[in-house]
Amino acid sequence: MIEKIKETVKKLFKENKIDIFIGYSEGTLPLRSTPCFITRSEDIEKLVWNSYCSNNLAVYLPRFFVSQRGAKDAKLPRIGILAKGCDGRSIVGLIKEHQIPRENIYIIGIHCGGMINTKKIKKVDIVAAEEKNDKVLVEDEDKKKVELKKEELLADMCKTCQYTAPAVYDILLGKEKQKTKKEDREAFIKEFEKKPLEERWEYFQEQISKCIRCNACRQACPNCYCKECFAEQAKPRWIGPTNDISDVMFYQIGRIFHQAGRCVDCGACVRACPMGVDLRVFTYKLIKDVKEFFEYEAGVSLEEAPPLATFKQDDKQEFITEP
Ligand code: SF4
Ligand code: SF4
Ligand code: SF4
Image (cartoon, rainbow, N blue to C red; front, side):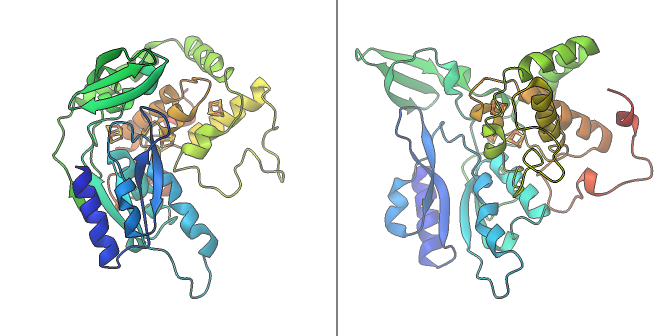
């Protein structure tokens, strides 16, 4: 697959269709790949594709265009990007929210087999790792090798992903992946919903009390592109800058609700959190509710209007009063 990616990127540079390509290169630690920005075809060899290409690359796109917005005769960059299903959905969201122009983005879509959550690997002293088909071979300091099953290490959102390839792309590489049933994806949130309100509130408080307000979740999320976040606004000041529980709750509730109809369950915020806050249970609850109330899923169509940007006479309104 990596050869196909390199070949495609090489062609794009040769035909002068892009100025920059965003993909992944080898990380500095085992089991890590890092986002990389290629501006000349000599660097294409740096590109990699493996089960550690977790970052949602769409997060980088708006910053290429924000400084030129409204500028007369602005020469906008032409950007090529490697997009897994979730990255692709974020790109669609950014186009719909007018943060990036579709014509300046060349999307190399890829069928994604899921990314590994390295936190699921219990060994801590890994010095080398190698991926072979559905296995990961890790080696520790004493040269002891252990073979792990990739399937058991997949991130939770990847295990039941329904959109393993982007819906919008210029070229699509790889073979279609088998998907699990949609019901399986919802199972964890349905379990959470069964709990009494007090218990859910208690869980929210327990999780949020771990938060240190480092903002890593916000910075990793492609939807959090505001130049000035509501959490930092001084006029008016919505919340204090402290990690006092009421400030933290306000921050989290604000950020989570701003994801309504926009979150694509890419898991970037969850991965970025150094405190292990279970953010997904809250963001996924919104995904599920938006789907139920408005029959809308983020990032799967360029044409469909986002539910919070439009209305229908018969829109459900229970959410206004119901918890
Ligand atoms: S959520 Fe889906 S598209 Fe995104 S990394 Fe996981 S399996 Fe791939
Ligand atoms: S809120 Fe989290 S899961 Fe949702 S799009 Fe942003 S980073 Fe991805
Ligand atoms: S990444 Fe985690 S600790 Fe940091 S602000 Fe987000 S939830 Fe809080």
